[in-house]
Length: 459
Image (tube, rainbow, N blue to C red; front, side, top):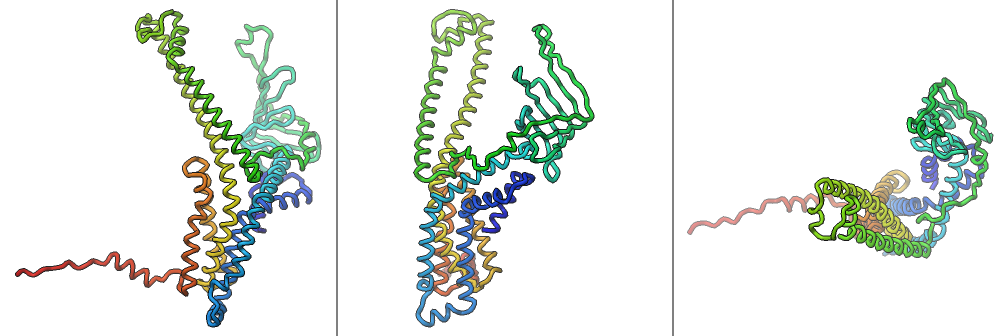
């Protein structure tokens, strides 16, 4: 858990660094992170602990003593099996209540921390609204991320909407105290563009503007809204990781109904737009000619009007292709959202089942390798768990994209490690090693061994 908490802090270091956070806020972030990483920490801990315990037994010949007194491996595992089963059932209720709460609290706290200081509110490569300006930077550096490179600023004008003033500079620096309500943005080596908007329409056609060069330019920004951030404010509450099973089912029903209604409405619109009567009316509008909606209507047009009709048709087809791409992307995002909610329901059951299966992998594996402690068992446990974890991530993303069924995407990792658990339990129960390389070599040799041909002697 400690290692995974450090990994989570490192993952979100950009949101946390340079914010002058107090110890209470840091403690809250770590507390909210603990439930979030339980799906990683719990199965790995069970796998590692089972390998260590049973490896310790085997290393000190305690299993030999048990078997000499008629105690089999299954009987030695019985009490721990009951404990693991109880822990698995508890993990389901934990995944359905505490983990969604942890995601809810952590995500909202991260968003509030991200909006605290202007140096962090400015993201690289995107425009960010701070006070009365929109600012974009290519790169940030420095201990507090106060040094900026490639700065572009759009200044707002309360009297008229739009971006009429643009400031560009090669470098910039955010100065003044982090707790101050006014900060100074000092720009160096840049240009100032101010688009003029004359009252005369004729002059507006020439798009006049004023351009000036500066060595140093200072902008004062009011950031009182950034410094008065409520850390307990919750703006995000509809993420699929924040919901319980009942709430997930409700959201799935609502999203599915909206998805089906959108498809039905879009089909009706397309049928109306692409019916023969509609296409004929488009041709008439583009050519200003009247006629019956017959097959020969286009042939009866003048050459000039035929060309105009074809141009209108090409424009309509291009517009329709663009509309179809946008609609397809929108429908794909809606399907992906529904799939993620369905996967989240399965994942609440997967956690408990994975704990049981990983125990039946770790315990026999520890008895087979006959090694306790934190050395070899740690390596083996991490290898098994990483394989299980990455298979789960790959399957989940494939299911979200529609390449796998939802249930298979959620359970694929568990289904793969299940036969491994059966195999290792059988090998440990029958006092066999992990793999008998001599038997394996003999079996492979039989496959490739050439069978002699039957020769018959001539009579």
